[in-house]
Image (cartoon, rainbow, N blue to C red; front, top):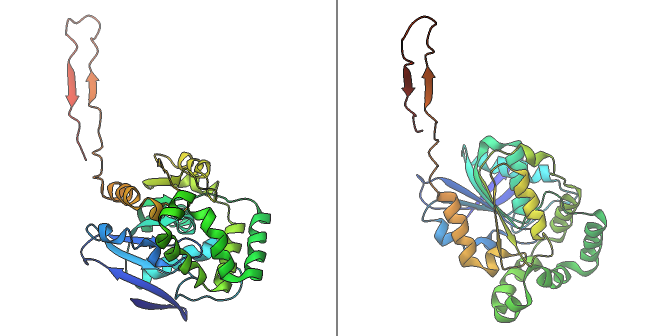
Length: 293
């Protein structure tokens, strides 16, 4: 585990995997920390050098007072990438982490390769919802946030059959600094990427949970339809799709991130020489062969 200081602020970062492998950066959901990705990491390390970090206000990273912004979260990620002297990373994010990925794809696309965006949205309306959540957190603290999150984040069947997995996530919520959670909620309230994401040209996979009340499948489908060539998949989960269906989530992410680049096909060009008046010359054809890249 590494502590990285950026402009005097400390970020908690964990770097694993071979130094010669492509880098994959993982970004956590609101109210959790980088251990949310523990189920995926063993499979990911077979293919990538994995960089996990606690987002501002979460885990052991800086949790300063005041409202945060989506742009600020994005610039934090870029600063970490720069501090590690990495030119480009693939991206895997869920909920807040996926929305940070959207901002990066729209504003710093040259720093991102492929991106898997889970349980995502370009906007989560409206401000009253977020303001109510902020007020409830102020009154009940992070224990109250954890109790409310359990029903939104996991289906009842999963809560009943996997209480230990649910509890592991809720423990992350309880230990999230309250100022960081409140400030991150303000970032969620104020963000709107509906127009910006139309400029994204990277390869993107959007994963949605069919039973997710926080970012319903329609929100993910809107993101995918706004990005040229993006793929869209739903899982039979609620919001924490990487926990509730870890096996299928991990396979989708690995398969997409490691898929070989499709060879670009070029249609052979055909040049036709027209007959000149008064001459009995047949039309000659010249074909230039296609070249694959």
